[in-house]
Length: 263
Image 1 (cartoon, rainbow, N blue to C red):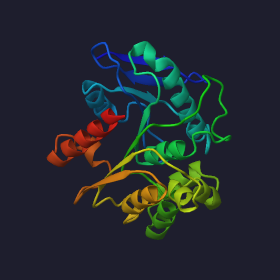
Image 2: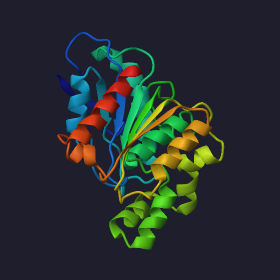
Image 3: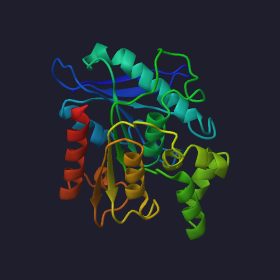
Image 4: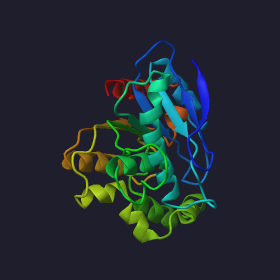
């Protein structure tokens, strides 16, 4: 399976493109990595991306700006540009023309959900590049930080310094955490007809508040979308990417592949 490293950004940032074998057309997937908004890179979910490409999905994993270079909304602007770039350029590598799906892990899940809920937001669609918007046809989220304000307050209350310091490095304040929270966007009724959603969540994930994933899936459905939640008891944050050969990890990855191939 070919892998391309391509500049997509006016600052020269690269995206890693995983191209399936064969002539296509392939469903396109924009993958947003985690890392508490402050670390990680386009290689972070490499093993998962290879599995997706082997299953016939063309995957774009963009590099994004991080603190101290850029705080919110810098990386959201990068992701918006990446979505437009993939829609415009992906057919050169056999991608099916038209819409693309999204995939996000942890804080990347927050950012991918924010793109899906605000695909035409004027603060995000600022970087020069292909015309269009950031709309996604479907969205697979793994252990997403769907409510960053709740996670920040949990981290402060429990003394989880790396987590709350990462929040403070990327977010300007709590008001912005609430404004740009996918959970709060849904609760405020600002999103209509969101795309189909799959959430993968470990039942022993201490990096998010208890009940965050079910509450998010319920709010997604209340906003007119379709949402499927796959809970894996006893599994923690990052379980399917850190331990991919475990049976429940394989089940989670199979569910992601099946869901993304539908779009």
